[in-house]
Image 1 (tube, rainbow, N blue to C red):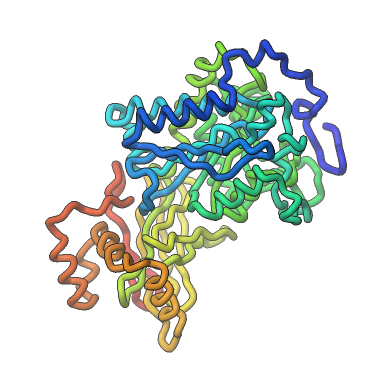
Image 2 (image 1 turned 30 degrees about the vertical axis):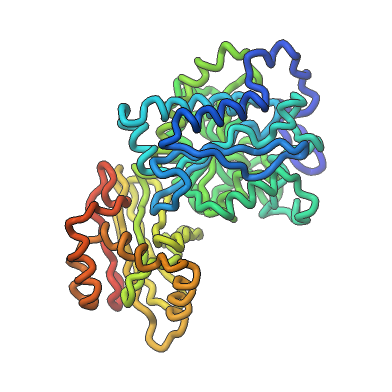
Length: 462
């Protein structure tokens, strides 16, 4: 371990590493070739993809993202996952593997159950390169020689709090995370073989295990990746092929912790190749070693955890309420459009799940989360004498552009009609009219899911 400016750094990440030779870059896509490959992909796989940019690098290179879904560009009541590659310019394996991943999903959609599950039930966003300038320069930092994985605001130290001093690539990622409702994500790195999870730093900068509130869930996600990998779990350096970030080496200003704290997003940092810049002819093998890990990590969003929708008992409107787990100091917010939430949890545990929102009575219930995902919907009743729920109603009407009634109808399709016997006749009529129509595709109709548990808007806990 070395200590530079009070922050620990591991020797394999230092700028003193030998410069990458021109010969070593042969076989890797340059930035223009990568852009061309992404655009060609969206033409070949137009039915399940789109391309968009989240910003530009210091040198003005667009940061292109592929979205892969059966309804790309449309908002749905589904979880979203993002992969980010090439955070460090001299770690290019991720950018190549993400193109392999996209093409595999396209080629196998409708044929392979896992590919079909992912495309139909997840909005997957793929950013092959966060640092195109660093890649072109064949160095770790960006064009300003800044390590982008030290450029995010940090919980332990007042780092990077001046917005004007952040790098454009960092700003683009932060804005992207705030705009999208990501459930989980992973960034791909090189130089080791291990799945890293929060916290990345500790209060006193010492190398020590620093557990975040969702330590069990993160350990489950990291272990899932490691066990699915060809040989990551066999590591002699890291037990089970996983590590807590601060226990390995503390990082401050990292993207992983910022995602979890400010984005409501469970992010892993994946070291996928011992060699930072292996020869290009080794890439297909590295892809095969990581393929099932990458696929299983995305599919984990719908195969495990607790998922559901939250809405108001008086008008049936979706509510952007918060979901809390007793004993875990962390909240996940439901979406404003559909009221859907997606909460990563370690299986094999009992949990008390609560939904709350100002102006409404909080509701909670106990669940036993086994190996499969659980669907848990909440119906919240307005508090008597509170004007908060009326403010929510008006806000929904103002932001819905006239779509709120349609969204409510779509939302109601996936819910057991029996629970609405207590609601008004208008909703009974709407449900009857829609009985013969195609059911709204939601979490409680996904492969392997059980019928949803509904916590209704009565006083007391279910």
